[in-house]
Length: 137
Image (cartoon, rainbow, N blue to C red):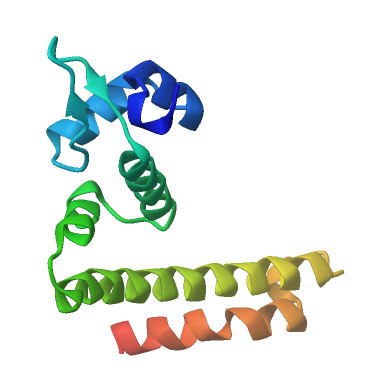
């Protein structure tokens, strides 16, 4: 079968998805596969690219409404707004993850019996202390 004739089961297998996910995405307005005369779904090449795009967007943390907005945007400005918002969220998450990694690395390097007295560890916790002083003080 060519990509123009793929059934929902074949597409689901190809992407490692349950068929109900593809049906859900269709109900959410993310997919619009062609239908045969007997109303069976048939997926073409464009549908496969759309599914791959949905999966990529989900991996990037976009919600289904944001993915729909991204895929249905008719102008680059709308599309860029969705992506810019997600970029900000990812940058914030990356900053938190980087800080957490530094804290864990500092704890690993600590040889003190009480980790909270370790100068190396304390240096990495200083930001939290400064933030808490700002909130309460």
